[in-house]
Amino acid sequence: MGDETGWNETLDRASSWSRRWLASLGDRPVGVPVDAAEMRARLDDRLPAQGPPPAQVLDELAAALEPGLVASGGPRYFGFVTGGALPVALGADWMVSAADQDAATFVMSPAAAVVEEIAGRWVLDLLGLPDGAAVGFVTGAQMASVACVAAARRALVGAQGWDVERDGLAGAPVPTVVVGEHAHATMIQALRLLGFGSARAVRVPVDVHGRMRADRLREVLATIPGPVLVCAQAGQVNTGASDPFDEIADLVDAREHAWLHVDGAFGLWAAAAPTRRHLVAGVERADSWAVDAHKWLNVPYDAAMAIVRDRGALTEAMTTSAAYLPFGELDPAARTPENSRRARAVPIYAALRTLGRDGVADLVERCCVLARQASEELARHPRVEVLDDVVLNQVLFRPDGLDVADLAAAVQRDGTCWIGTTAWQGRPALRFSVSNWSTTAADVTRATTRITDLVDALSSPASPGAP
Image (tube, rainbow, N blue to C red; front, top):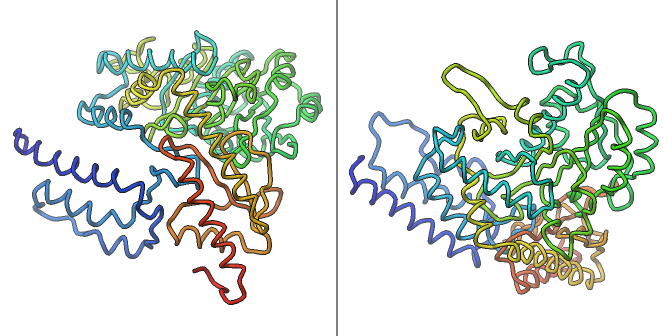
């Protein structure tokens, strides 16, 4: 099994299937309705005493799984801000798996450690963030926020003379956490995981676009004694709007013990595009930032960055210690919640090196232009209402007189594209998110045309159900 012939045959099988799958993304149905029972029936759930050859396992696995795979990496998947995988990023990810490096420490993989160092500097440069900030490469924006909030907890509680990593939160001078009413669920989950609790966070009202209101934040902060952690947002999940960072930063800077964190899962990438940078003006004044790479940068899952201005706060919050495992400044695991992990910075490096500064800007701008196109095409239909300005890559809309869930289900069954449901101002709505490098204007028109055709079909008295 370990000889060259065995490796080649097995990897050739995997490569062959991968190429066929990628070639099919442009035309295959985006979402295939396969229920859990059917998927279980397709997979042999008996653990064998002696297994078949590896190539046979891969062939059988591909045949069983493919009907349950969603074409989320394709050009007409608009249900979530998912992105795709740039060819160079996918190739680099294959190399990561082949090399199989544990990226915890420099001595375990000097290559992985130095790639993280360089890719981190590039990300800071592209996003206009402080040169000396620490960058940890994590699984997604949720774990990025966990790392950042842990650093904030370390700094804020430590300033009161309390070692939270050693002594825990019981009896500690716990900071008050302040979030916008539209804070993302993963931001709230990060607070839960770190012992702040979801219900204890103080909610600040938002404006009609979902942005935190700085005037109301001022009122809230006036009632809070002691240390405070303010969590703002770049890219509201439904509208793409960002909080007014300059105004928020002014309020945070006016306090003695305060920390400003920004959940910028996809919206922070606006800083990399000159035409969109104004949307996140002042974001560089924060103390920490969470941003995904597997969304708008279009690298394979999973990849994100936890960025913290105070390097010491992050490393002190994250570093573990063991006699056999000394950590230093060059060790990637000193900046993340994980020790054993893959070298996920390598695809990020490959994507950034291939795209360059101009390519990243063009990727962001192109998706925003395509979102505007989708908004305009949907709005032309008399029974479709676009619910908010398109400032970034999110289109929020609702069909008049139709059940939102019925339309979403019809679109998903049809397979031309994929859109998902959400809630906006207390009512159901639909999201159309553009974040894939391979999406074209023709893909958008094909999708919006089919969506409006289904609106007509569902609105017809002769067609009470979805086509």
